[in-house]
Amino acid sequence: MWYAIIICLVLAGLILLYLLAIMPRMGGRPDYSPLLGYYYAHRGLHDNSSQAPENSMAAFRKALEAGYGMELDVQLSKDRVPVVFHDETLERVCGVQGKVQDYTFAELEEFRLLKSEERIPRFADLLQMVDGRVPLIVEIKIHERAAEVCALADELLREYQGAYCIESFHPLAVRWYKKHRPRVIRGQLSSNFREPGKREPLSMFLVHHLLLNFLGKPDFIAYDHHHKENLSRRLCQHLYKALCVAWTIRSQKELDGSRESFSLFIFEGFRPKS
Image (cartoon, rainbow, N blue to C red; front, top):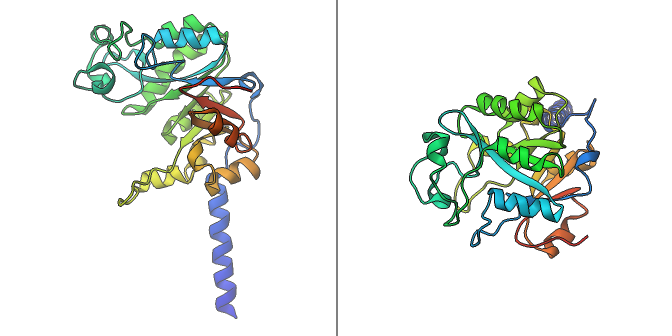
């Protein structure tokens, strides 16, 4: 009998710890309403075989003209300039070796995006162009120097008058905003990172199951819509009433199939219908 009681108490304790670990911000949540009512163009309204490739000023202009919100990625150049670029390395998009952080911004400007005439934008120039006309989802890319990326991107966002939120796969970036800019809407990005035949690294396992939410207390969960049935994501949505964002939706069928699980949608490769 005593063994059964002890086992029940241990199980109850583990469940409680789990629920506390995944809990998003509960009290004093910021106003989400400026973000609602928009579809968000993934890296701009881009086509990587055109003159409007991903994360280019041309792609962002197209999204702005169409009235879409925008999702974009921010990281630092060697001389600490916040730039809009997704990959850690330049090879796929620019056809050159090395990482973004290996080059100064002046050097990065010499490269072209996917054989177009577009170049890597400064984050400051993107903010100036959008000028608050549509909301932004800003992904903080943490390849190194987490606090520095957050701080330098935030210097620009402090002066920005439009609606925006930040998100990151890296819980320490979300935590930085919790500590330094608590009124900014912040989100934890996640997915199922397991590869067939391989063990999921512990750090990825923890993010996959949102077990590090206690560090940053995110306001929203941005989750790969293919894995929307993840228990932790569902609990954040239904138990904790957190805002949930779907990425990346690539067809009207995927969009329609995700509406019950998410409130905001990051899309690519088509134009959503309401």
